[in-house]
Every structure is written in structure tokens, then in C-alpha cells.
Image 1 (cartoon, rainbow, N blue to C red):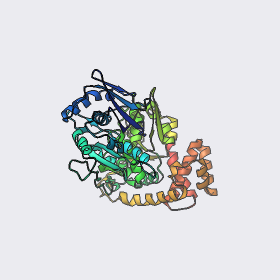
Image 2: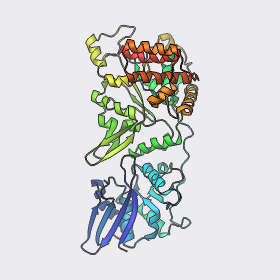
Image 3: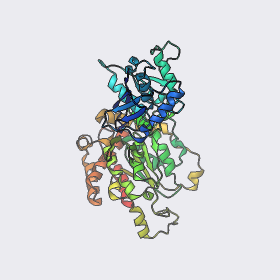
Image 4: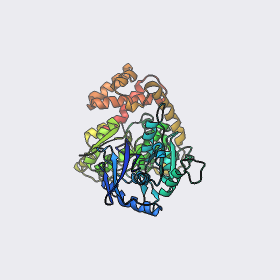
Length: 511
């Protein structure tokens, strides 16, 4: 037979559409043509595949070889098509059987020696294959991919994963007619034991800062955005690093979404399964690094922080244009990257945690009076954060320096587990009431679930008139007040809950 058809997967953002790898052998001068909109790294498969086939002990046909990657209008990139192309050549030339190939999908980059190297996006491809082929009336397929990608692919429950280390091993599997009892056949991968619980730094390490811890507890319970403001050395970064330990445990669906994004960037780590992502990009990062991009779109830091925390330390030191790209994803929870020939959607449901000093020297408002920055320098520094971005912050927390007595005293604060237990209770209340966190409530849900008593309305109305807050700020105060009430397990939002939310918001006026 001079024609062989195998199946693989491309990557288009978070999607992994099916690709048919068609290999045809024809008489004529030896040639190797590849069509189907392949990128440069895919075209280079010709040399890798030729060397891999010869070094694996098989014969490279001295014929005209045409490889078509269908559909033709879908861009193909990376070396993941090496394995199906090599197998297609061997099947079309009769060196391995053809009929068993229809029950599998393939992905893997080949070295010149025929070894299989890991690829990006194995989890996304496996998930897409499983959805397309698993179910009543569907022909179920297995996935053959490199051994190094087996653990992440096996996170898709009930998926048939057959890892391999080389082209020779895959060919031996089909020579055995896929009989798992036969010597040389590939064995279905058994996933490794996953960590029972993520290991986060503990809040008990932080001395003092009781007010800050309370505000972070509110932020964790409702998934609210936070801005920490204070002089250097007061513990802002230390508090932020411990914040993910307060968040509710990830569900299987959330963990799978987060792992799929990490897989697209080749940064998946099985040891971090169900650990909330914590991303802290440097303030020199570009807008593309933060949001994602490239000629073939890749996820950025905000997508890598999906279902977790994005921490921006030294917030005013970021380029203002870079910070502005956060505004839409903070509201929508996703980012769309469009290029001339590519368009990709990535999830970006992250919780923003930011930290900053009050002035260029850092000591604005410090009790020691060390700040010597002129007023115009302070205004310019704080003005690096735009009003629209500041308006999207739910809580601003002043982090003040500790006294020598507080520093000398032993750590006696609550542990992360104790705070997280209260956060989990508040989270459960929100899920039972509206099926989402308070931060995600829309206008109608706010009207339904955030009704105020007469005293609460008076406090909020007076604050709105005095400080000229926007409609967005009004809704954010109601969401925070709802979270404060949930933490106290109160069905109604009372005046103290509104007052606390206003106090968290009022601090924004000091900037």
C-alpha cells in the first residue's frame, strides 16, 4: 500500500483540533514534499524523520514522498508531527502494519537517533482526543506519545495513554499487533501517585499585621483583587507568598484547566498538581510576556496564573502601558490574542495581588519621617497607576512597619489552615447561593444577593456622595460587603459589613 493515514493534534490556543497525517509514496525521483500549512519547525521534520528511520534500523523509501497535514487551512507548528510522519512512511512502504494505526493518535518529536523527545501541550491534546472519542457510539482511541509526557496526559481520567521512548519501540508495538501480552508491546501508562495536598508557606510565620491578615482573609474568601501599600521591609512580599494557602482547594476541573495552560508552555509539574499557581513576573516584563503573544500565540503570565494568584511587586515600576493590558482580562477572565494568521483564546481567571511603596524613596507616611520626596515627585510616582486600573482594585491595605517589641515577640499568629477553614466555609456559602465567587457576580446577582438594610444604605450613599466613586466601585463595595457577611455566616448584609468594605475602599483615596 502506498498510502497511510494517521491522526495527530495541532494546538490553537487552548484547543487541540484533530490533524490527519496523510503519507503517499509514488514512483519518481526521490523527494520529500510536505503540504498543509506547516511552519518551519514542521518542515524540518524531513531531515529528522529520515535520520530517525535509518538509525532505527528501517529503510527510507527511495520514492517521491508527499505528506499532507489536513485540514490545509490550520497552521501546524512544533515537532510533534515527527512521530506520525515517520510511522506513516513506514506504513505506506509496508514496513509496519497499517490497520492497527486507526485506533491511535500520535504525537512526539524525534531525535536523529530515533529517541522520542517531550512536546508541549500533551495534556490539552489528550483532553481534546478524549472528549472527541470517548462516549456512546464513538470509536475510542489511544494516544501514543513520549514517555516524558505520560504523567501529565494521564491526568485526563480514563484516557488510554501508551508512552514510548523511541521510534523502534513504537514500531515493535505494532509488529506485535498491539497485543499487550506480547514481548515488546507498549503498556498502558499507570499514572503516578499525585501529592495529597499542596505545601504553601504558612501565615503563622508572619508577626503582627492583624489588620492586613483580616483583609487578606476577606480577599481570599471572595476572590477580590488587593493592593498592598507600605514602606520597604514591612512584609508585603512575605504576605503575598503565603496568600495562596488561604484559597479554597482546587476542584479537579480547576486543576485540569490550570495544568493544561502550563502544559502549553512546557512548564507542567506533576508535583504541583492542585496547587494554586502563584506567578510573580519581574517589573521589567513586557506586555507580551504578561498577556501572551508571539507569531504563534503562547499564553502569558496572566494565563499561567489561571485559577491562582498573579502577584505584581513594585507595581509603579511596571511600564504603564504594560499595566493597562490587565484591565480587560480582570473583568472578562480570558484573553484573546489575534495575529495576521492566528487567533487564540486563553483563560485568565486570576486573582490580582499587587504591592507598592508610597513614593520613590519608599518611606512616604513612615513614622520616622525619613521621606524627603517633594510632593510633585510623589504624585508622579503614584500617577504611574492609572485611575481605571486603580478603580478595579477591591481592597487597598496599608502595611505598616512593626515595632521592635513586635519583632522580638515569638510568632503567635493564626496558621494558614485555620484561616483557610473560615475561607472555605464562606466559599461554600457562595457556591450554594450563586454557584460562583462573589467577585464574579453580575449586576442582577448583586441586586438579588447584596441587599442592604437602611443603615447600610445610608453609609454607602454617604460614601458615594463624599468620595465621588464610580458605578464600578459601588458594585465592588457591595461584593466585598457580601464577602464580609459570608465570613461571619450572616445571611443579611448589615451596616458593620458595609462600613468595613467602605474602609477597605476608602484607603484608595490616600493614593
